[in-house]
Image (cartoon, rainbow over all chains, first blue to last red; front, side, top):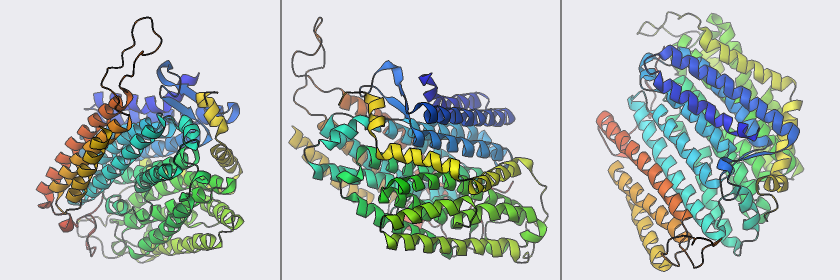
Length: 499
Length: 128
């Protein structure tokens, strides 16, 4: 049943094709997408169960054995990422029913959403570097279109910056690929693990590794390569920005984790210090950026950057506990961050604006929105007993164990500053008395909408659940970290004894 | 042959970086076209160029009898060209649309997504 490994990729693409065929039936498109999302989540869960109980799974596509053909590989990290993608995909597909207007659906919102998820799942599953490039492109293409779909001035402006920097990142990635192929004659990641260790010139390998670090650093929003992110993420519809914020930068983080554990393990080169410095700077700059803004979605965009710093910190420390912390952080962050963006849509709906000085009084009028915001916001900041507390605690503990006291201090202080900007949203949008109703008559409260509320409630519940019983998730993250640090099993499963 | 291609690639990259550092989006597109071609040349050269003989295996033999050209980099480049072409078409349309809407191709003059002083919530999705 290894062909099931292709299911997380096939399901969304099939849904995209069906949605495209149903162009004139927006409700059916939405139904198909929700169905596909639920199926994707189920397949992801099945995959995780399989990997957890029977070890790493591999599918040699087309019957060509690796390293000659393309292999799809599911280890703990890949399976976990697919599951969490399924969670966000489902939430966004449901939320879209209420958030995406007829015009955007007419322009092909649903096919693009499904293609985006297909590309993301492909990137998580592939065991081949060139194939990873292709999935990145699929994903980027869909995200470009989703970002500028509304054709407003802000979207076009943000879109230009987003597209430009991502194309440059792609070119760097492709250059790195070409050089790696020139050095080793292979592009299979497991095979590269073996071949690059025997490379004649370690300096050349390190130079190529920097190309990959830069390319994936741009994708994941690492300091100083993140400026495209706050320029664009607040411009598309809420559902789109939720899936972007949850998943796109994390594909970059995943690619960093994968390449720097499997292809260029840190113990073979000197990049570790660079990565740690970049991680610390990312945390600090991101959170300071968030502190200076007054637009809900822009504050949240800067938080993405600072949170990516934590994940990369876990990678940079390169101990079992730190990597487990990084994986845990990614999982927690995706749920919380996507949820916060979805909630920004609720603030907009009932408060009338994303601008903090124009909204207020939501706590009085809509106490439950305040509660829904409170859970993910303070989880992100790291309040016990929510999921973010455990994620931060594991990483700080790992920094202390590794003797990196400065990094531990930075991580703790950045957590405090996160609280500051979250209380800003809290104080302005929820506690402050409501300002005068907006001129366009939006002072009248729209009715509650189940399509928007259900995914927010479900993801908030998930955050609380992980917070109250972090053990199962942490164990999965630990298994993922063990596999990452000891890639022998991965390599053996993919290419056998061909060493 | 590799030396010539390496020098050529370097020259093209230099030209493309020069173009892309400009503030004009049209220049940027030309720089991008050049850069993607340079990367394709690099992959081509990285695959070694000892011969132009096609990789054909004579009947009855399990492997090529002489040195043949490496076909994999060419397949990679072909894929990269196809993807690059699609991206290029998209970026042309996006930049044209941006020019029509924003009235400029100067990246310094584009502030709509990040206004210096936020006065309005025009940046953002539509209210449903």
